[in-house]
Image (tube, rainbow, N blue to C red; front, side):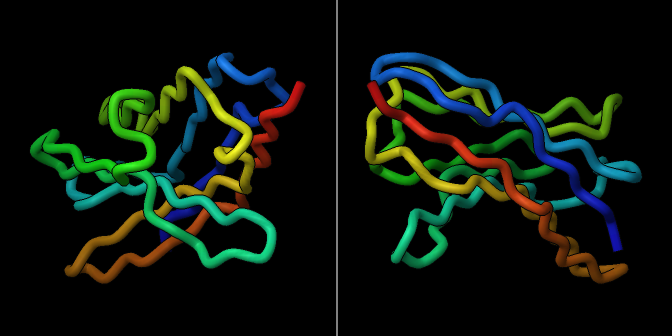
Length: 117
């Protein structure tokens, strides 16, 4: 299985920005899609953003216009640029990789994002 390591989380004030990174242990060229999920205390894990190998992106309505997902296949890394952060964005953010064949369904360990004044 592909190993995923997230980084870039932290404490930020409302209106601030963070960039999360997800480094994969092997090539992500054929991994389709790569996702960012988040889970807030007492809530279910939810899909935040998705990027296909083609570069097509999808976002949760709650983050559209504020978050941007991107991938650098040469660096085996996926990013989540988060702008105009709100307290309700506070959660543990997880990177996820999926591929049908050979089968891949991997999760990172998560990185905490806290938005608070």
